[in-house]
Image (cartoon, rainbow, N blue to C red; front, side, top):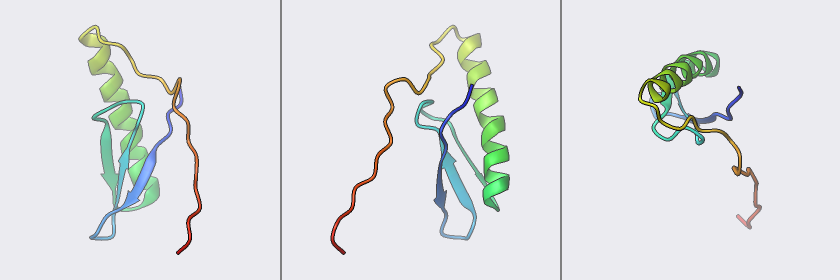
Length: 72
């Protein structure tokens, strides 16, 4: 399975991530690579917890990603 990860720069210079298809699944890291590695671990743990609890495992079905341009 693959999930889209949103990466946000944090104030202190590190990076925060979130996985939109898995509400509550977040992580962070000092670099983008570290944040993505940590996010992979977070997703695996999140999915394991959902399965253990018999809950629906989220997918990206129906999630659309777009961009808009606005005047500065």
